[in-house]
Length: 376
Image (cartoon, rainbow, N blue to C red; front, side, top):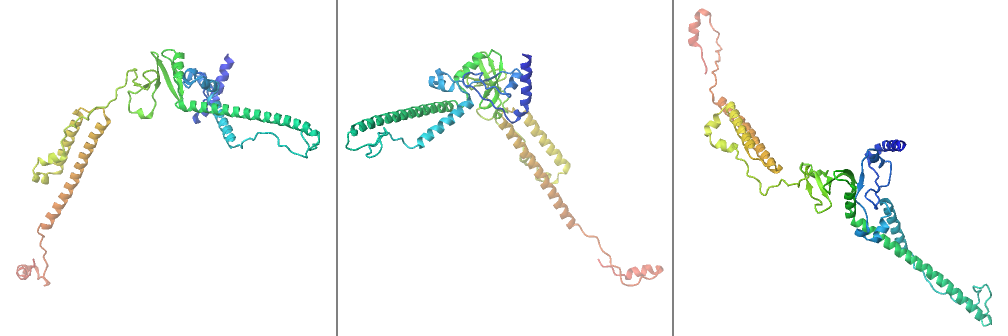
């Protein structure tokens, strides 16, 4: 026994790297525990994990003919059989029809008995009897062969339809027989690896109800969706981690938006001249108070867990913040324009152009001032 365990572990370790590219799982339709053993399947045995499926055929659910054709095969063998039957039927439909009948009478040639035929002689009766016996034998043999081929073709077509109907009706790789057998063979509270639709999932039995672990990406934002009921009256129902029915977080009508103080309403309450003459510090203080009011309103509002409502509030806040930045940019541009206008209207300092006369000596300075010409 120890040698078998070591061999199983060695095979599992050898096959483990190949599982990164996938795993070949070949189910058998006779039982929910039926799998063709491979080294990859040995990984579950080495880890003491139970592997089950619910793709089981039965006479009660699918009929005795289907049970006889499908029940003794695995999935790979059934697909190979399906391809073989389709090829045989297609070839039979393209083959020319077989003509049956008696051998044509021919005069002046050797008969089937090997003797020369003399027309009009005493041997005519003997030849006719041999010819009739030979024709009857050949015709019977051909008819028997044709009947045998027809029977084989009819059986092939019937088997082909049975396999196609079974695979079509169980495209979800699940049957009620398989679910019932899986539930009966599991003890309460047990966990198994459930193979379905070419994927592995976790299955759990609790209070005679089977559950499968929800791993669909579409339920990523639904933390309360944990398990899905499998089989029974609650088939397809979602439950929480405590196995209570899941209640969707969807309200009949969206709640009203929380009242917020907008930039336009706060600006309309102030005089126009105050807005034009307010300093940068005063504007920043007003904007900070405005943002604080928005934050308090956002925090105090009763926000539903609906993601759409939270997104709407965020969009409103972003729009008001964008309006505030736009108003600051416009105010800065207005101040620059006012400063430029004030600079253009201010009086220019006078420019004195000295006279071209030569200034006399220092002692005659007083006289030279009266004679100089100053141009404004």
